[in-house]
Length: 66
Image (tube, rainbow, N blue to C red):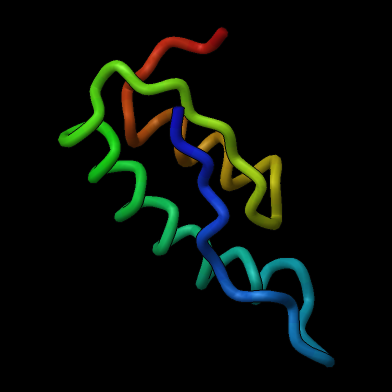
């Protein structure tokens, strides 16, 4: 089991899109590493913006949705 908590917190004056731009890049790298080093893992995402980061993790790992 892998829990993705990577990402920066939202700072004052930062909107959701600003946060997304930074955290998507982080999630892509983390998810690619999970697919490579833990191909049988169950992945739980708790990074914000949650809906977008979860979709990035799903796409980048190529794992099945359960």
